[in-house]
Amino acid sequence: MILIFQEMGSKLVLVMLSLLVLIGCTGGGEPYFLIEGSLINGRNAGKAKLYKFMPEYDELILIDSANVENGNFQFVGHVDNTAEAYVSLDSCNDAFCFILSNDLLNMKIGCNGYIVKGTPDNELLSSLIMKRQISVNERARIQNEYVKLQKDSTLTKAIEDSLLNLYRMQSVGLSKTVFTAIESNYKKSPEFADIAFRMFSSAMSENMSDSIVNILKSRY
Image (cartoon, rainbow, N blue to C red; front, side, top):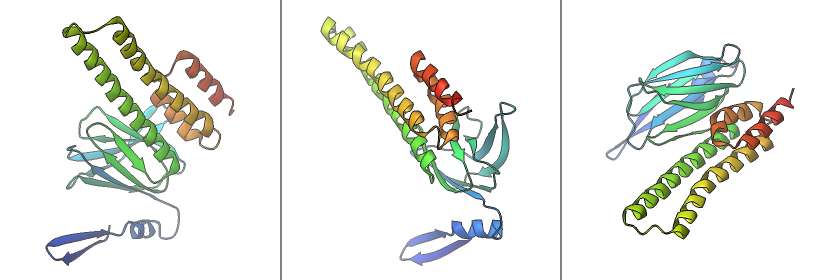
């Protein structure tokens, strides 16, 4: 990493020449990935670890680790093929899934979610993750409203039916969005389709899940 510091008034500007890192690492040869990570919205950690999923063994292998400095971390390396990968922080049980390829990727991890940008597949996957979080928040809001009305003895049958319908529709809406994303991309991006199905299958109806399984099988 080449760091250039410039003094502009009272501010210190850090210029990160990421592309030069890739050129220096590859020497003009095989491509490398560069992952620029940052922790946001109060998320804290001391170390980040990068794992790659090995489908032939059905397990994750550690391929790199980095210290988190001022909320930022970085991974540089090479993969022979596009792969399912995860970043974990410290000893946290959460693992943040994304699609690893030899590209410049930007990952932001917060307390309630994360996004990865840099490739169309990762941006589509991140949009599904954000929709899931919005759905989780909305279901929590509906549930809290239900409990409040129940305690206040103002929960009528009509209101109860309306809230239950809204609650169910959150899951239905997310399932349809995931189904459409996989159905539209399984041929041109099998890695995205596989990862999205593993991540969201539990939120899908049995019929939708079976349909996706058949779609994925049709590739072979």
